[in-house]
Image 1 (cartoon, rainbow, N blue to C red):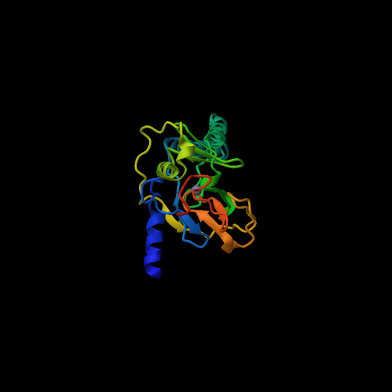
Image 2: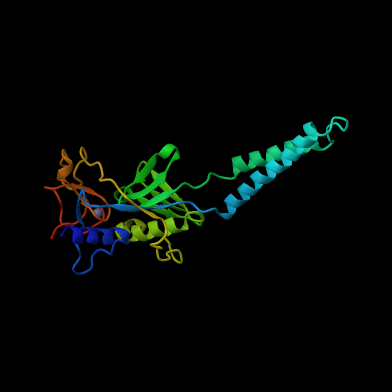
Length: 250
Ligand SMILES: [Zn+2]
């Protein structure tokens, strides 16, 4: 019994959530302790980041040659006439690469808890699907906007993460994608890309039920929408999710 339950959950968690609203629609209601997963994507070097690396390398080589010419040549020869220029030019090139080369993209996570970006120092900034208010798409960036946070996914460097995020958003919070022109961009999400990670149960005590407003004092009283992660009190679960319209009660 336990094994079949685990298998069913793993299958659901591993695949992009099925479309809502079909006949025989599965109930999306979840317990807080139900297994949740996400996938972690490392940025891949893009053309821009390669140019930056090349400029850094060239800057180091040129300033190194300048340093040699200025300070390390045999004493009887003295500093080379061009050494100062090489040194200054090399340092300027490397500095320019650091200042104008753009920030490297950070690892992104996509899954049952929404989207997340890994910050410096191991901090993870999260944006739940239920917190997404708008989605923007440009040639370089797919951005999920919330009221206080927005998470941008660099399309050149995080192609698989962007495809996955778009596919999951389509299945979970389709209403937020209305008006977004994604023609030609929605390749199938590659299920083998990214590293699957198990998520800890969400911290929900102290939150209020989205439908009834009732305070959730105990974690065990919380119920979650399996699609968007919206939080409800067990006594206030509506027939359909107030945020994403998934069916929660028979
Ligand atoms: Zn929902």
